[in-house]
Amino acid sequence: MREPNLIPCLPENAPFTLEQRAYLNGFLAGIFSREPAREASAVETSTPPLLTLSILFASQTGNAENLAKRLAKEAGKRGFAPTIHDLGKYPIEQLASESRVLIIASTYGDGEPPDNAKPFWEKLCASALTFSQTKFSVCALGDTNYPKFCAFGGDLEKKLTALGATCVFTRANCDVDFEEPFSKWQNEVLSALNSTESARAKPTDLIAENPEPRVGQNANESTYSRNNPFPAPLVTNRKLTGEGSEKDTRHFEISLEGSDLNYEVGDALGVYPMNCPTLVNEILGIFKFSGEEFVNGREGAEIPLREALLLHYEITKIPVPLLQAVSEQTGDETLKSLVAPTANGALTKFLWGRDAVDLLRAHSSVKFSPAEFVRFFKKLSPRLYSISSSPKAHPGQVHLTINVLRYESLGRARKGVCSTFLAERVDSNSPVPVFVHANKIFRPPLNPDTSIIMVGPGTGIAPFRAFLQERQAIGAKGKNWLFFGDQRSATDFMYRDELETMQRDGLLTKLDTAFSRDQSEKIYVQHRMREHAKELFSWFEDGAHFYVCGDALRMARDVDAALHEIIQTGGNRTVEQAIEYVSRLKTEKRYQRDVY
Ligand code: NAP
Image (cartoon, rainbow, N blue to C red; front, side, top):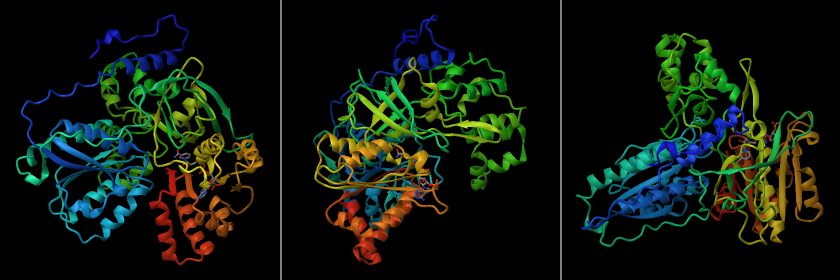
């Protein structure tokens, strides 16, 4: 590791505010303190035969797939001959003949499997096969902000166990910040398989040679990544919503000049934010900390408390361990009941709209040292936003379309961390640390003659602006139909001029809008879809691809239901035939979603 004193630091007289200085110094420290990649472990001279290992992944945004590739590389170094399979293409019968299986499974929407893993899951649920020779372990990926956190991974584990497979290692449930739990699970599960299994492995499970794991290349390989973000200048910050709108939705343009970052339409941009300095000052004020005290940052290195709160920890939510500690120190009965294992619903309700400041002001007797205090918080994770530009139309730039989150709760103003960071706290002196997050399963059709139907209410329009720019740039002949909706046409019709120009130019074949609050009854995008059932069906029959982006919990479900109805009414199909039709669209990758 580098010596800490080799980490560059801004000179004292550099023209930055305290927050900007902390931000930039923290950013440099993050980059320069990282350990160089570990050397591959020494090659053993007498290599024992390799163990077969199937790594299955169920990915929605590409994280599970990337982790599967990493796991395969590591397994290859540790005595296994790994093969990687997408659960979406993996025949369930094959599972019954596998000896060792490691599954990396994302959870999508409301605790569901990713779209392409649904057919596998349905077959597994209906299966009469037994998997008695299969030993497995699951690494589940999810987001603790959703009630059914990591549900699909847990469901898989239960179902496989019920069908006779042996779970050889405890499931890892990883939050958005998956690095640490994933690495721990990877390390321990491979050791467990190696020590307990190699002695008992049957000859058919052993491979004599040392093949390279079948690992694909990441199209987006660059010197900049999630672990080494590019400090990008924000060049445009423009409000899209008009005077009187209930929302502040912004168009951001970020320069990628000087980086070797590439992206494709459909990809997302990861942004590392800085917390709001006002909130940091409020927290420091509660304990009368100066902010200069040294504490562990997210990578473990010691840094000043102010910097840690600004850049390293998720401080806008109350972490449950903090709630537990406050409950223990105060003996408060309400808090005790909230942290009891039975209090699930009440806990979620309590945590919503509260942060550490609310909790600590209500229990002012509690005392923590700065080092104890930061240990309660989760690491601040990067936010992913669907990219709203095509690199062909805007070389060297990436555009984002983001709703700036601000609301009031318990008499205090609250701010979305990253949206307000971009809207209020980035200026020409403070670059935005970014990386590209590939989303290979959300792409325009390879054949430019294929027509597309896009449903993107609100900021869900982002990737479709990118798709349209891309199709214009390559002269794609396929037709384009966009369903867009938001609250009011006068204030919330984002990119109206651009869309109308595209329509006039013949690029946007059809544009249907649904402004929910322009009249007394709600009109949503799915209502507009239903009005065009016959025509939509004929587009599907001609091979059109169907895309949905935006809110996962309500909109995407309702749009899915409307799609089924459209196949019935527009295509004269029964309920069962419509289910089959939609399922075929998914299998053929003609129904793709980017929703959460
Ligand atoms: P929004 O809140 O989704 O509102 C857009 C429009 O949708 C409004 O007219 C709203 O009407 C309407 N709507 C409400 N419920 C609906 C339903 N069940 N079916 C169809 N339409 C419905 O817009 P937003 O503020 O831009 O937020 C977009 C959401 O999508 C957020 O949850 C965001 O996290 C997510 N998103 C994800 C990505 C991504 O990168 N994957 C990108 C963009 C957005 P009313 O409010 O009048 O009821």
